[in-house]
Image (cartoon, rainbow, N blue to C red; front, side, top):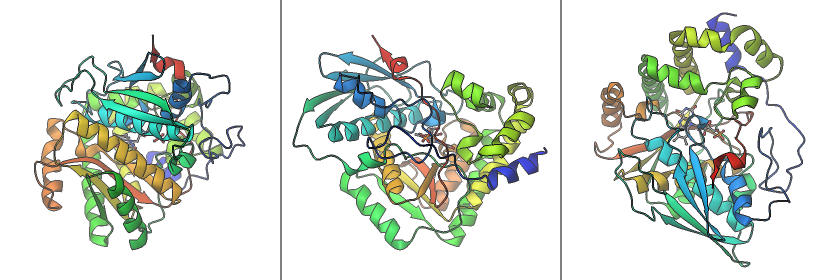
Amino acid sequence: MNRRNFIQLLGVGAGATILSSTLIGCGGEPHVELFGWSGPAATLKDIRLKVLSYAILAPNPHNKQPWIVKLVGPSSFALYVDPNRLLPATDPYYRQVHIGQGTFLEIASIAASALGYKANIHYFPEGQYGNKALANKPVALLELTEAPNVKPDPLFDHLLNRHSNKRSYDRTSLSPNEEQLLQTFHQKTSDAELVFKSSAQDQTQLTGFLTEAMAIETGNKARDEETIAMFRVNQAEVEKYRDGFGVAQAGMSGVKKIVAETFFLSREKLEKNPAGFGEQAVDITHAAAESTATFAWLTTKSNQRIDQIKIGRDYCRINLQTTAMGLAQHPMSQILQEYDDMLPLQKSFKEGYGIVPNDTVQMLFRLGRAKPTTHSPRRTLDSIISV
Ligand SMILES: Cc1cc2nc3c(=O)[nH]c(=O)nc-3n(C[C@H](O)[C@H](O)[C@H](O)COP(=O)(O)O)c2cc1C
């Protein structure tokens, strides 16, 4: 199969595998397989473990799952960044890794509410560290208190279906009502600016920016290798590592997936030819952006660790709300990355859209309509708990 055919195949990937599930009634009935997620087993007596079993479903960069949890006292846990699960080439200041801590806390808080608990979150209980540094200090202490009258967050019903949908969309934009609904929803809990871009001109311009950003990102061996290391070439790798992502998350399934994984993808080929992987990534990015009619981003005035954690919470809530609305959502972060080669293009993007130079665009994502895709895997709960 040549590269073009492979890209075409990705663009027209068949529908996602639909599995019946025993998870019905806890966090919404999943439409797609949740590999590696065993749910809040009835045997889990500790409320913290129940909450954490949902939190690991949080969106996070490259599906690294960069979390360490220390159980503290009878009803609290401290969350730390896992220093062995960073992305130094593409996320040199760990900004995205910190956004992925916020997503985790948000899901924990939503799950707690549905289980009859209030989650009191104390950010950086041992002090915040600089936004280019990483310290061995917790990003948050989460304390669970029983609150039988707590109102379950309605987003709980969408925890098992939320995912990052990387397949091609159907080229329709969100309606003004959908954008308004999301804006109102977002502003209820956040001061961060949420911007939508849905004009034909934005579509062309953003497709150009995002494709060029991927070309820059993949023009470097260390960055390519970092991404290839998280790309799962077949089910055996998914089962072995239980992290990362593969063609299934771009919508490929059934026979096409088997054909691609058998004849086209192999770890050896990828590692021998990272530039080839990069070229495919550029084509896939172009096809994804080109199939999308609505883009959005979240911007903050300051860029401290706390801002990054809070934007993770906001982003996660938006992703759950779009899931509730039957919409697909997918971050496209390359243009936001902070290594030197990306900065000139990032500057043009910000100037082109009148974004204040000192503001930080924390998340950029596309929105639209597409069939769901297979969930990315998750490691076991005990692998994130440190004793
Ligand atoms: C901070 C952040 C940045 C991300 N950037 C990208 C990206 O540039 N491209 C992409 O395909 N997915 C991106 N994602 C989505 C992750 O790949 C996805 O959350 C992860 O694989 C887990 O999958 P799930 O969201 O479907 O559960 C990003 C997620 C986060 C939280």
